[in-house]
Image (cartoon, rainbow, N blue to C red; front, side, top):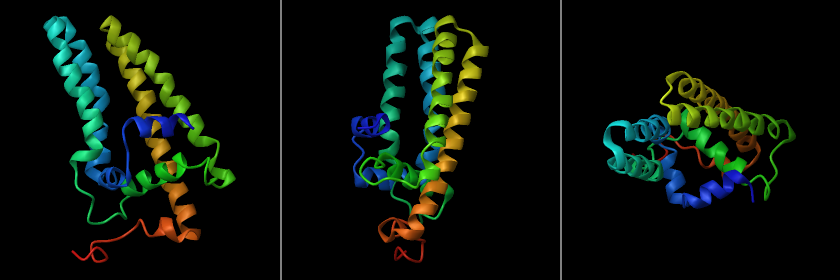
Length: 175
């Protein structure tokens, strides 16, 4: 099992949750998770042990985010296609992806992961610059990764009807 698939399993991502997560609101608000966790941990300076409350709330938001939005009426948005690409990427051990899509997503995940120690150090030391640099690495890696997932989805869905069926517009959904 891949690391990403393990994370998806820990988040209990079933088909209904993936459908909800394909809502652009879910994808874009997901970017609030890291700043909320950082602020929650930093709140230990003024809240002491009570900082566990915002920490718990920010972690709850991390889990709830893919669930709180309804499935979108249209899935032709860039964000929806990025989520679909992630699903395909997660299943790459069972259904291999085209060779041209096998290297860069891993590199981009490493770029994003390189920011995590900087964030941790910055949060521990209450230092803004390492925290911001770490966030920049995480977000740059993640946004480029999502763009690659769109490309992966677009490539694979051209030849695979089951993936092409994930795209529907407002008119297709009966709305």
